[in-house]
Amino acid sequence: MIWYAETRRRRMVQIVGDLAMALWVYGWVRIGLWAQDQLGALARPADPLRDAGTSLSDRMNDVAGTIGEVPLVGNDLTGPFTGAAGVGDNLVAAGDNLQSSVDQVALWTGLAIAGVPIVVVFALWLTLRVRFARRAARVAHVRDNPDFLELLALRGLVNTKVDKLSKMSPGLIQGWRAGDPAVQEHLAAHELRRVGLRPARLWR
Image (tube, rainbow, N blue to C red):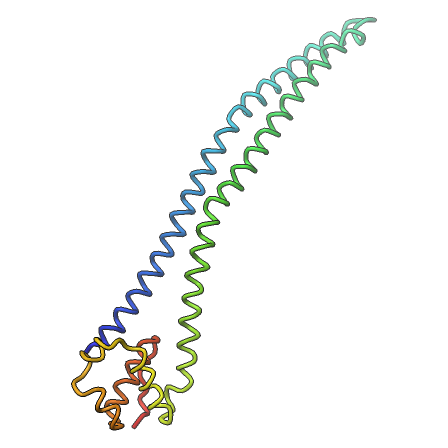
């Protein structure tokens, strides 16, 4: 029957849409992570900078300690070496700052690259899903009420394209005009399936 095919088609569209949304999110997350890694590579000079600073600081502190042991003048001669050790400490701090800054930029850039397209498409997808759910909810509360059978049949008639109506059943329009219960159930069931609901079993 045409309405069964229409229902299956709508469900397949929903499933494909959900899968496409999941793939979209996954793809942009991967792109965001890739961008973060590429930008994070800019922090590579921070490692040799820290290493050089640590090495300089350690050596100058060792020299200052050795010279400080010289009697009488040792303490006076350590100044330049402790100063040089401070320069090494500054190099370490500069390396840390470079690493931190690049990491922050890489993180926020990756989030922006992945987040913007995900949020935009997710908002559209969620809007469509919420709209579908609300439409189904409006119909669900009258589904099992026989008094609304004619209304559901009318909705099914109005919401179906003319070419599809002609394929659903011979004499469908005439049967609806005549108030044929079987035709009304047919159309009502078609409308329920159109919004993702199962037909009621209490019409008769």
